[in-house]
Image (spheres, rainbow, N blue to C red):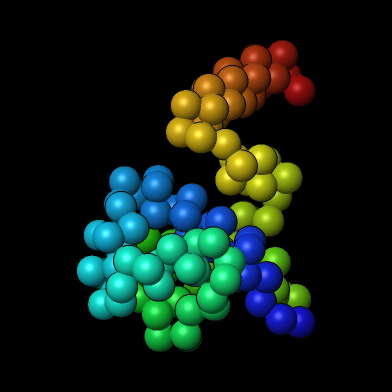
Length: 113
């Protein structure tokens, strides 16, 4: 199975935004150009293994989570429908959805469900 460049780029963009890093800051930390980060996030380039590892380390995420749709055996829980939903949301939407999920969970627990 080959790497899904679009999904990989979206996940890198998601975790970069979550870490409040700009593309320029991520590029500086992984020792590459901002243009290369843009190409990776847009899905036009696949990072080399060493750059992928640097990106994962910089974003404090496992490479497993970045590559989850390419792996046949993954221990990551990131391949859930909820996680995929959050990847497609902006920060405000993520905050609202997570708050609602926590409230729903608390309600279910209080009902013994």
